[in-house]
Length: 332
Image 1 (tube, rainbow, N blue to C red):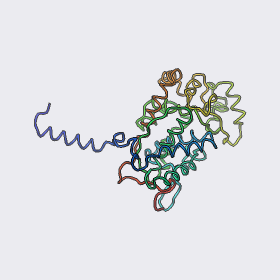
Image 2 (tube, one colour):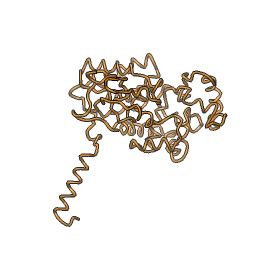
Image 3 (spheres, rainbow, N blue to C red):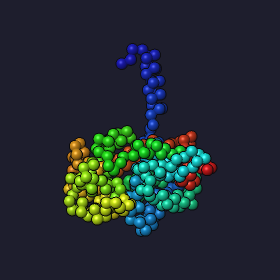
Image 4 (tube, rainbow, N blue to C red):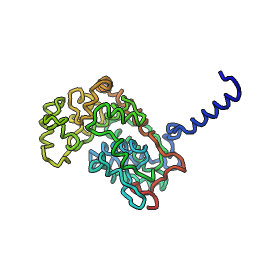
C-alpha cells in the first residue's frame, strides 16, 4: 500500500496526531467512574429525586430540560447552573432567552449536590449530577433506565450569547431544528427521540400562544392544531394574559414517560410548533415507528441521551473543576 517506509512513518504521525486531537468522550466517560470514590451516587440522586417529585410532579421534566440546555451550550459541563458573577465575567446562561423565567429545578440540583457532598465531598461534578438526575427523572416516570456515562468536570465559565443561538426554540421549523441538532453531532432520529421527552412536563403559554391566535402573522390560529385542543388552550392562555400559565405538553398522560407524545402528534395534538413539525418528512416515519412501538422509542431515546451526554464534556484533571457549589466557580 505504501511506497516507502518514510511515507508509512509520515502517515502514522498524521494519524496519531488526528487520534490525539479527536475528543474521545465515549472512551473516557464510563458508567463506573465513581465506583471507588462515590459508589452510592446514583442512589443518592434517586432518593432526592423521589422526594422532589412528591412535592412537584413537574420537576422531572424540568431537570431533563436543564441537562438538554446545558449540553447544547459549550457541551455538557454544568455551565447552565452558574449564577451571574461580575468578578469572573460570568453572564449566566439562566438569563438567556431560552432559559429566563422558564428553566427550573436549580434548587433540586442544589439539594442533590448537598447530599452527594455529605457522602463524597469534592468528588462528583455538577455536570454529572445533571446527567444522573435526567436519567432518574425518566425512569421514575415509567420510562427506561440506563447506565449513565460519567466523568465530566464542571466549567469555570458560561456562554449566555451561545445559549441565545444554539438551543432549539419551540417555534422553529424542522429545517432549523435539524440544523441545530446536526451542529451538535445529532441526527434526525436523535431529534425525534429526544423530542419525545415532551411526553411529560408543561410549557408556558408564551412559547406557543402564537399558534392559538396569530400563527405566522396571519391573525388566525395554526390550522394544524386540533380544534378541541385549541378551545381548551385558549381557556388556559387568553389573549393579553401574562403568558406564564402552563399547559401539558402531553394532554393524555402528562406525568408519565411513554410513547403517547408521538400518537398525539399524529392527531395534530402537539403543543409546540417544534413538536408538530415532526410529522413532516423526513421525520414522519420515525414518529410513526415510535408511536406504534414504545420499546423502539425507549431504546432509541436511551441511545440518543447517551449520545447527547457525550457532547463536549470536560475530562481530565487539567480541564474544569469539581464545583463545591453548583452555582459558583470554586474560590468565588
